[in-house]
Image 1 (cartoon, helix red, strand yellow):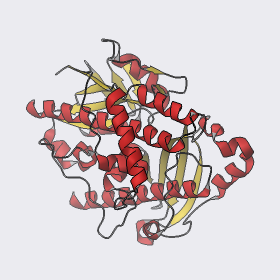
Image 2 (cartoon, rainbow, N blue to C red):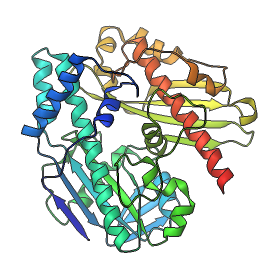
Image 3 (cartoon, rainbow, N blue to C red):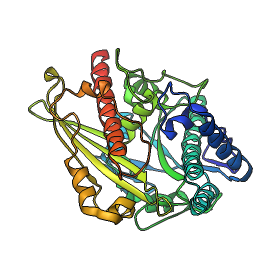
Length: 394
């Protein structure tokens, strides 16, 4: 397979994945009204949405340090270069998926009609469709690779940790350099995609299947939510024994792989950096991005949280569209800067931290900021424990 075009892919989003994106805890029973809104968004998209998938195999792949050359176009990503180098990848698939413009246009219409609940469920379902499409694309590539005695690596996208979202435009140009995409897709100056319910990705390809099996962080199955896949090489990642996370381990595994970077320092401390991408709750859902930095003590001290900071990603302007920022920017930004939950405590304290669930994408109220800090610290906790387990297995 050198090219895949699907203009009518299955968009049956897993209800559990949809609920997760809505921000519900695993065992929480959603109320009748919420279920009605969720079903309504799903049905509307079934009737009106136009999703598509496009993938093609690159002709040439070269990897050197933090630089990747795909068909003579250079990209800079230490994380992606590391994945490709570890697996001794010889090629890659370039993938574009989109839920189409319909869901976000409908969400905008609902917002203007002052229907915030309907807006939120429609907006979230559009995001769920994109996640489903990228997973489905990966599964189809895995099926082909399995028959060719090769393995497909976890996908990586501009905007993920250690890959500047600004390189999205050149990746899009590379993807569509051979064939017109099944649907319209363009990049803004910020690197964001339009329609925004879309995603570009690179899937590495390797002939060294045994090497992939030995290195658990190179097995895409561990973070792939596709149920009953006949090509699964590994089970979903399990949480450390006794860990009681507020979200599914599948979500934590994906965030750890795509949004988190960890660095062990010479003194045994760990520096963690997490990127959060969300949208404002007003102004038609402007995209925003915040960076979380956490310094942890050594493992023998329980990864004590020594330093914490949260601030907009350099160059981000979306946060200025938040309603509280526009009303009174100073106090809001001061609160974001000063809030350091669990500072001085062991990292595992996050598992006992009781906080309100507030899935709003913005930072306007304290509950939504605490909710995000909880997800960040849980992801770090999960990643560190998986890292130690992997080291012990080797």
